[in-house]
Length: 459
Image (cartoon, rainbow, N blue to C red; front, side, top):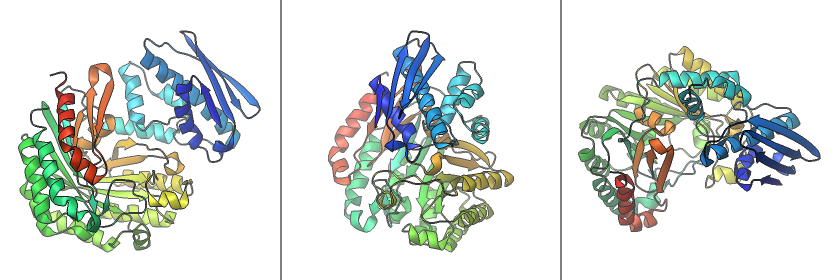
C-alpha cells in the first residue's frame, strides 16, 4: 500500500514503485514539507523510516510541484534500490522525455550532469542523452507558429499481440473506410490557416499501406493543399506484405520524402508469434522494392518480443544494418492496457533486455548511426527506452518535434491527439479524438470546432 502527503505525490511515487518487481507488496508512506527554501520529508518503508532533505526554491506553484515530485521520487527510489539491491538504467527518472529535463537545466545556464548523477542515471544513459542533444542541432527549434501535421489511419492487416493502439484487422473495419476518409478530408479542410510554418507531415497508423491505392490517394489528395512549402513528408507504410510498386509510385507522385518499413524482427518464429503474416525475407524485398524511388527509409525493431532470445535480437539488428535504412528505431517492448500480450503475461521482466540494448547501441554506432531522439513509456521491460538512430543528415524533423514537444501538432483521425504548445507559458493543451471509429465519425464536426478554437485562441 502506498500513501503520500501531500496527496498529489502519490501518482508519481506509484511510477517509481512499478519500476521494482515486488515493491507493490510493501507498505510505503511518505510525508513531505516545504518551508520556502528546503524540501524535507520522512519515508516509511515497512518498519524502516528514512529522512531526506533538499534545498530548492519555488517561484510558483508549477515549480513547487515539480521539485516536490522530484525529491520525493528520489527518496523512494533510493530506498527501493537499497531494499532490492539493484540500480535501474534511468535511476529515479520516470518521465518519458529525459532530454527535455536535460534541456531544462541547460536553458537555466546549468549543466544537466549533476542532476542526472543525483537521480542515479547510468553513465551510458547520460552519454546517450548528450549524443541525442548534439544530433538534434539544426533541427531543434522553439518558435511560435511552428506546427507538424499528423494523419491517423488506424487500419492493419492483423493485430499484433503487443499492440495497444486503436487498430483492428482491416477485414473487420473496412466498412468504415469511406466515411472515415470523408471525415479526414473535412478535418484537414478545417485546418486551413491555423499555423504559420508547417514543419512536417506524418501519415501514420496502423498500417497506411493496408488501404487500397485509390483510398490512399484520397488521403494524399486531402493533405496536398496544406503542404505548400515542400516540408518533410512521411508515410508509415508499414508491413512488407502490403507493399506494392503502385503504392510506392503514388507516394512519389504526391511528394512523400520518407517511408517507414516496420520489420519489428527478422526472426520468422518471432513474427509468427506476434501475429504478423509476413516473413523476414519479405522485409528485405520491401526495401528493394522501395529503393529505386529514392525515399529516406525508417526501420523499426522491438527488443523483448515474445520469447525472442538475445541471439535472435542481435541477428535482427545485424540484418537491419545490412539493409542500410537511413533511420533505425530500437523500441523496448511496452505493454499497455488493451494489448493482448499484457493480458497473457502481465508484467514484463528485464531478462536479456540490458544486453539487447547494449548490443544495439554498439552495433549502430559502429555502423555510423547516431541517436537523435529518445523517449520512455510506462510498463517498459527493464525500465529502458526507445531510441531513434539516424545516418548523418537524415534525422526526422517530425520525430524531434514530437519527442521534444517544441511545436504544435495538429492531428486528425481516430485516436489522434492534437497539441497546442504555449512556449511562453511552458504548458501544452491537448484535444484527443475518440479511438472508437463510429464515435469518431459522429464527433468529427465537434472536433473541427474545438481544434480551430484552440489554435485561434491567441491569434
